[in-house]
Amino acid sequence: MKAAIDLIIALLVFSFSSTLYANNNRDVLLEDLNGQPQALSQYLATGKWLVLNIWAPQCLPCRKEMPELQQFHEQHKNLDAIVVGMAVNFPDMGRAKASDVQLFVKQNNIHFPILLGDKYSLSLPYDSQIAGLPTTILFNPQGEMLAAKLGRVSKKMIEGFIAQYD
Image (cartoon, rainbow, N blue to C red; front, side, top):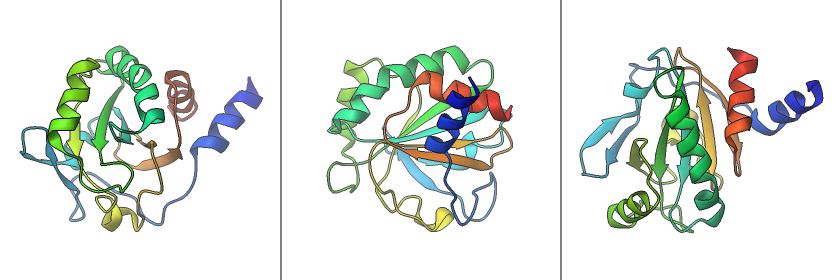
């Protein structure tokens, strides 16, 4: 079990040069699928873990992890964690087209919040661009970014990480 936890940590954790906290002056503004601006901070420091998944409808690994992210969200949203998706275009990592994202969300019964972004959406708060897809970033209940992982994640991986730090 210890080896599995160590592997999860090794796969998930890498450092960023700064941390985004809720309600600071470096908030990230994105649009929802209806074109309304949404602040990322509204999902931070709510007393729940935030799993921010950056994905694209055209990205096969992203599509494959969506059912597990939806399962995780449904099982945890009223307890200790939520999932928020940030959709980008693939392969150029430009701004996602709302119509493509809406179609994917509807066809795949995705019920967690989805916001639209691009590879620069997280540049200012993280001094980093998105390196690839999918990317999952984990924030603790106080709104501090603790870890990020490039590549697919599973419900079990996320739950293991949270259990270690909870």
